[in-house]
Image 1: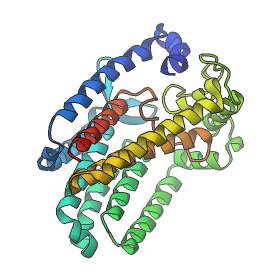
Image 2 (image 1 turned 180 degrees about the vertical axis):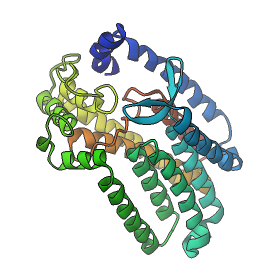
Image 3 (image 1 turned 30 degrees about the horizontal axis):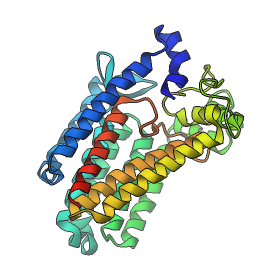
Image 4 (image 1 turned 180 degrees about the horizontal axis):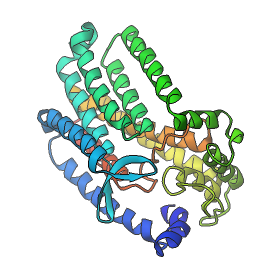
Length: 338
């Protein structure tokens, strides 16, 4: 699908139709190697490294604001030749490791003492969210916040306290959206994309056209019309729409069923993990992968505002693929000790 959705764009921009496919294969090979490496050690050793990983994540998020490569008005990437690295993907994993370790050490405090059991996690989350928002990247911010809140809920945090946090978060999101013209335009385009069909609503409209024109069986593999410079980011954020156009409803349902099966298998690891740290580490990884998939497909279908999150394991994107595969490696690692 990456080859099909990117060939014309890559041929036009780089004079090499296989440009993105070749880069993706390199990242795929690296991802598989890292996945097996992550599987090879005792995951419980990460508990001692949790704070170090978190500090490294904060350092990278700060550095990218100063020396990162700007693209589309956002500074989210480090460039190393033809390869790129998005530190927010590493930050996702580092934060999950830290919160899993925190819960395993202070689960009783989470249930009984807001200031000692929940507030420290919220301070860390707020700091990371602040740095990610400066890039800016609201989609990752939303996913991070949702995962941490859900992990705290499963850990036994009082519902009334979490509800209060959610209310404050929604107020903050409202302020962020209303104070930013481009975010406000995205929300308005989500509500009514035809209000501005050539600008803010363009992606959503073209995505809906792609999905709708695919019908039940699709136009055929490689026969998408929307990838011909109609649908922006067709090989990254909107690859699900191209799948729908070329492989039809059967293709998109197949992707949904594959993700559903994957998430169910990951929840089995959560259920049977051998210790509290493993339980919440696998839970966090399962939630972040599941949320990214739901958000991406929801955006493509027009039922969620545009967020800019890739579809795990399917979209083109090196950092996303690498750290999603590292997450899978950790899940498999935890399952060994279940």
